[in-house]
Amino acid sequence: MTAMGLLQFGLIFGALLLTTKPLGSYMNKVFDGERTFLSPLLSPLELWIYRLSGVDPNEEMGWRRYAASLMLFSVVGGVLLYLQLRFQQFLGLNPAGLGPVEAGLAFNTAMSFLTNTNWQAYSGEATMTYMSQMAGLAYHNFASAAVGIAVAVAVMRGFTRAAATALGNFWADLVRGCLYLLLPFCAVGGLFLVSQGVIQNFKPYEKVKTLSGAEQTLPMGPVASQEIIKQFGTNGGGFFNANSAHPFENPTPLSNYLAMLAIFLIPAALTYQFGLMAGDTRQGWAVFACMSALFLAGFLVVYHYEQKGNPLLAARGADQTSSATQSGGNMEGKEVRFGIASSALFATITTDASCGAVNSMHDSFTPMGGLAALFNIMLGEVIFGGVGAGFYGMILLVVVTVFLAGLMVGRTPEYLGKKIEARDMKYATLGILIPSFVILGLAAWAALRPSALTSLANAGPHGLSEILYAYSSAVGNNGSAFAGLNANTWFFNNTLAWAMLLGRFFIIVPVLALAGSLAGKKRAPASAGTFPTHTPLFVALLASVTIIVAGLTHFPALSLGPIAEHLVMLSGKLY
Image (cartoon, rainbow, N blue to C red; front, top):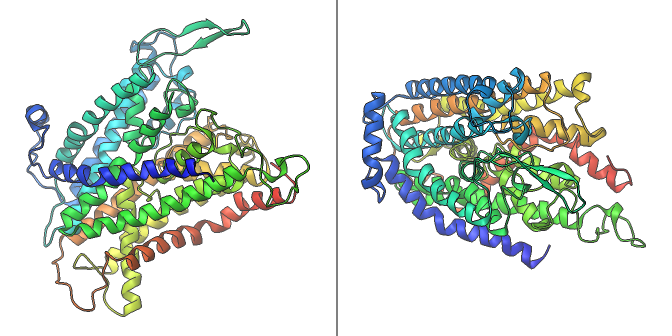
């Protein structure tokens, strides 16, 4: 590891520290319906939207109605996107003359963007029209992100209100998230990306001559407007197949820096917003500290092993043992303009959050570098995580941690003055265990299915890693891939689509139920026996529980995949 590489981490984390408090305070005002500096401009539009849709923003919803509204909005959006993809050839803005998206792929893609996953089993420039990219995929980048933020805010209300029966109004939270948060940032950020060289046009694809005299087709399109929301909304779906490794999406170090920072901005700010709503900002900073520690640990692991590279490719004459270092590190699958440090940092951020954007190919990482990225997703996308999803995923682990702490001291577990009872633990356990059950169950099915194995680019433990990564990415609503798996088949299109749906809504429903349960409880004053949940001890306990829960659940599978591959590599064999 180099000082310059560590400096890149410091620049990202430093900016995150500077923005978390002001952005969290702003978001708290937005979702409380308070006046902000954008209100004179956007408040009339917000009220017009409510009148047009017949929504009363002051009408509160219980958790069941909140969940039902969310599900209705999602189902309708998914159906409309599916139909748009199936008939995109008739909808205009199609200079490349692309035809309809195949039914299985259209279903997979609709479920992918509906759930904020943005898994892409297709090449964007060869499959999607400009209209589908903008009015279909980019729209859901905003909508799915706003849904995640709305759920996080509803959960905060459940944990911080006392003797209440409601969690807010889903439609108002959805509108405010889009109008006051996502759209303004993306308007400014999109213009910045254009200044860096990200293209934004409606031109037909251009044919050019290469230096060798061959003819090459350069895809065009409205890229910058989709690129910014894919990062800020932790969506990750690329306009082009190469995603953020493509120079038209991510041309400069500055655009790369903005991409990484944008992924974490909202998830980090939500922790401070939670502290404000709880009346004790230390509670939010404790969650932030746990996420930050796990973020640093993951980056150091990926960076170390990618810088060390493959010992079998060490300089000629060197002792090719486990301690040998590949000259220049492992640059396979990485862009020279970014290098190892920036690629490792991007990979860590995108797998910490439920953002599938990549600026390097994770399939080409060393086994331990790939293991760290995969393990980040298996933790439940809670290391800052997706917009909203990271917070409400972590809050489930907070409940488990508080419960364990209560058992240790022999007291009824409490969090923010509310007792954590058996029903609450059932909701939390469901939200934690269901994703792991889906990941391991579907991965086992794929590993035993001969037709699925033909989609693998690699054999042995690396092939298993490709399968594990695909289902972990789908269930975690991440969307990135090891890139060695041909997922555009009937089996993978359907199983991954259902994995995305289960990973999204089978967490949202239990966590809303938990929030509804806690909202109705009275708050008891802290006593001498209350376990403090804002101290370094609690942060360490929360981080340990996060790692142990994922480790105990997924270690057997990981030991057969990337861990086995690492050990076999040290013995002289590659896959």
